[in-house]
Amino acid sequence: MTSSGSSLYNPFAGPDPANIRDINIHDRVPVVLDATDATYFAWKTYFSLLFRENNLVDHVDGSVDSRAMVGDSEWTAIDATLIRWFFTTISKDPFHTVVSDGDDARIVWVKLNGLFTDNKLLRRVFCSRNF
Image 1 (tube, rainbow, N blue to C red):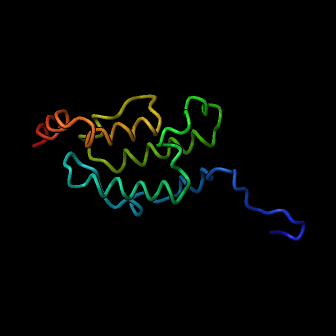
Image 2: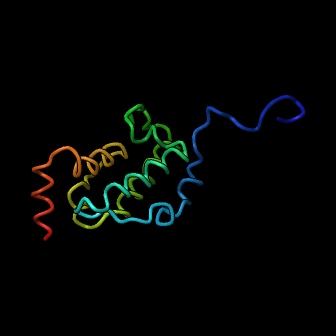
Image 3: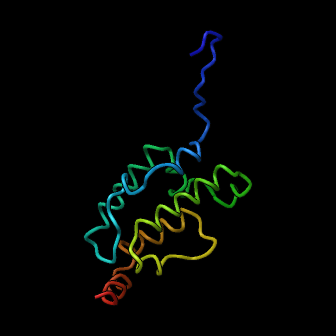
């Protein structure tokens, strides 16, 4: 607290987009997600921790409608950074399966997780294509 009684910390302010953009994602998520189950749990765990550490959970948990945030340049900058992180930490096969123009971070997160949890048959087909 400062001598005037006000705090320099604003608990309602979101993360700073510049700080988020400058995170070296490969240091924080040292796993490349591939088409097998072997890397999925570690990849998701590293990302989940990163989201919590940097107050980014609301970008992927569905608690905020990204369509309502279109006019918020900080929100959209952070969302774009998360999408870039996802795309640079997955192999080419999952990338080509989930990439779609106009998706927000939540949609990409759900698609990636869905490859490994939602549809066992689809996942088997996807994995068998790559071997």
